[in-house]
Length: 324
Image (cartoon, rainbow, N blue to C red):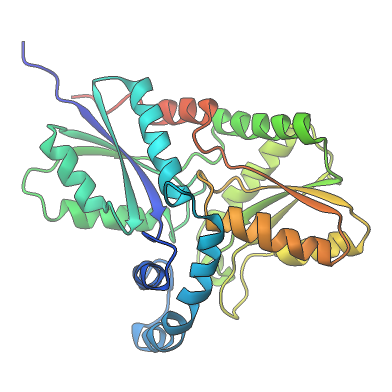
C-alpha cells in the first residue's frame, strides 16, 4: 500500500522586521504599507506619502519601540510563532508538516508553500492567525496564497480557514487566560477588550471585522459572567487622520482615569502572538498614558501565544484535513 502523503499546515502571521533597526523596519513597513488591502488608496496618491514622508521618518521611531520589546532570541512574534509551530507539530504527529509563514517578510507564503510541496504535501491547510476576519489581514493572506499558487504547475488541494472569532475553544482559552491573570494579580476595576482598528470607511464598505470583534467581546464577557459596566470594547493602533473604528483605546483609557478608575486590565484577543502592538503600544505606551491621566495601574493580559489551550484550539481548527 502506498504511503499517505503528509498534510501541510501553514500558520500565517502578519510578519515582523528581521531586526530592531531602522533599515530592517523600513523594509518591513515598505512591504506592509504597499499592500493594497492595507491601504485602499490610489497608488499615485499614496506612494508619494509612503516613500516621501512615512518611510523616511517612521522607521527610526518604530525601531526604538521594537528595541524595547526585542528578545535575546529575536522578535517576540517570530519566537512565539516557532513555539506554536513546534507545539502543534507535536500534537498533530508525523502525518502533518507544520510550517509558519509571514505575510510580510520571511519566510514568505511562496517560500513556505514550495517547501511543503517539496516535502511531499499534496494537501494544505492554511490558517491565518487572525481570529477575526478582515480584508486587511485574512484576505491579504489569501492574496499571497493565490500568488504563490499561480507559480506552481502541480497545485495542491487546500483548505483556507476564514476566521475563528466565535469558536467555543477560542472563547474558553481567552476566558481561562483572564482567569489566570485575576488569580495572580486580582481583578482590576474594569476590563478593556482592545482590538486592532481599521479605517471606518473599510467597515462602511462591507468589511465584517467590527461585527466579529464585537461578537468575540460579547462571548468573552458572557463566559466571564461580566456585567455591562465591568468591561468595554475598544480599538487601537490607528494611523493617519481619517476616522477609524471607535471607541479608541487610548482615549478610553484617559477617560477611565479621569473618571476615577484606578486599575484596568487590558486583553487584546485579535492578536494570536504578542508583538509590538501589545507589548509596547498597550503594555508600555498606553500604560504610561493611563497613569499620566490619573490612573494607578494598567495590567496587560498576555496573548494566548503558545499556551496549551491555544495549541489545542489550533489542532481543532486544522483537523481533519481535506479528504482524498
